[in-house]
Length: 304
Image 1 (cartoon, one colour):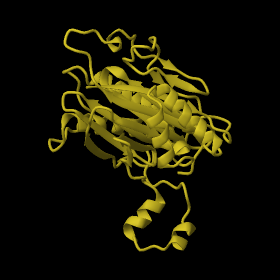
Image 2: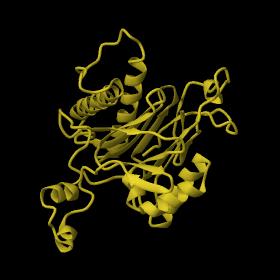
Image 3: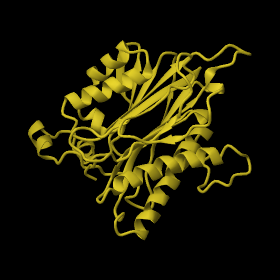
């Protein structure tokens, strides 16, 4: 098994800058989407710090002599520990940076990330906030993450709420994000991956504009991952484009036969790029030329 991925971020139709960031780290099969928040364009700083901190952590921990900044939890797998521990330093960096700057004070970001293990045939998912992960499998779509939002917290505590009571709750208020407090609670889960599975990581600018059935239709009708990402973004804009929109799609495919050279083995080291609409090339796709595999878009805002 191998994981192919593409991602796109767009400012949307009603924001003047993009505060989403994403990263695809092909050598570690790590995929990240972050949705920043904060005044004075601080959200884009927070989301960029989150993706960069996680990428730096995964690259650093590739060596055996690295000292982990947090204790290794023996109850969790190595992959779960790496994902969890990669998010925690990002939280710490955002808080430290926020405390040193008046303009950046109070900034934060959501994050949703996936780590694929070809050896274990598992996808590990970690998230904080309301950026989501979905899985498309055999013609069905499933939301893998639970939004850390005020509405969801109320529903957990009071599942008997009526539709009228639900409608009175403020929308888009999140209860967890990186940068909110020193200790961050991260939801970690693992999923047994199957060939053909597609995982969608997205900011709420996508999930808030199109429904699950529309996402499923786009994925089912587009085998090219970058095309699928672009169509998801176009659809979100057609439905109003109220926020920044980021879509990152990961497909589980069969790997090369023993001794066969995969294009992903010849791609250059991922580089950072930015533009209002940023696409990253699916690693290992034979009909796609080498290009940057880590992308971040310049900076929209959200309530947090």
